[in-house]
Image 1: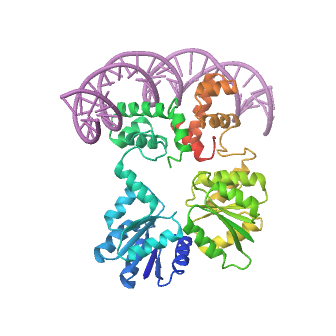
Image 2 (image 1 turned 30 degrees about the horizontal axis):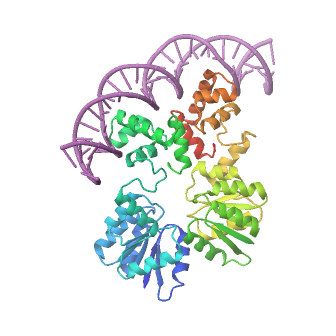
Length: 209
Length: 209
DNA sequence: GAGGGAATGGGACCAGGGTCCCGGTCACCC
DNA sequence: GGGTGACCGGGACCCTGGTCCCATTCCCTC
């Protein structure tokens, strides 16, 4: 099983290589630090699996995945990323990645995912699986504020970044009135008096950037 | 040299351990995956250096750093961060970290930083070094936002906890007008438009509870 | 003593934020 | 079919928040 590593963090590449080399039959045939390099190395080294970071300088993992899948449809690509957001998950899957693992997963789970992708299977980490299930069920699942609706959470997230009502309205293509109405509900559910307190609560819960 | 690793990413911990174990005299005595665990292990294992990630589930690296420095002022804490953004790095240093390295740094540089922190030195990147110098040269203004006056910082701190103008006025025995006037100055100095954005900035810098 | 900045307030003004109440559409479920 | 809830929006209303003036009192420094 030949593996190609593509990640712009030397430390992380080192960890992956150390992990993979413990496994009999696994061999790290190359390392790339950006998407361009990843595509070139994958085409020349013919690995069974490419472990691909999404965020890399220059050509990112998403674009590299698209190019590789275009030329080698059977190549297994395991996307490895920090971000857990819905957009990334589905963008990666649409691009043709066969697996999606968060960087926070345990070593054994990661190795199992690499092996599975090499065998042609598709795997997702448990965290992402939960995320997908939540996304599919759409219900007010296990978010930071489960009592909020989807829309209310979107608005709160923008609020947590200091956006004004008008900016939120523009960002979500809503009327100013709708934003204010939603926020009134959010404040009630969070049991806060105004937007400033809501920002405090939201950022305590890890929202915002 | 005894090292404790605190990061919620097993893969990254693995990479760091592999790196450190190449060095004679270095020993990874423990691994923690959140701030709570990091504090407990550091107090029981007595390492020379704690390599601390900032973003961890539950008690984050910032709070863990504060608690550790409180109990073991001489303990070297090396913060490991994704990005070099001013607010978080500065907050970490304010919490008592003796250095920080980006996750993207090369292995040798990372090892050098760990060794330096173990020796009691402090290591910072050029961007932070500039900021530190400015912070120190602006005298014992002590805290983020050196451009603010003492009173303005007090008010901003209350604001960062979601207090209204009236509440701030009562808390500080001031007129409502005075609070508003001070806040107008604070907003100008922080280059934000309103209190919500000020809350965001303040909490990014580690203010508030 | 003159100057400047920090701190404290007042007056006037008004835009944005927030509330309450109302209407409608759509999807889902009993 | 009827009910419920999310989502979208309007009207009217009030008040906090924020700004731009202004003044006063300290205190520190030149």
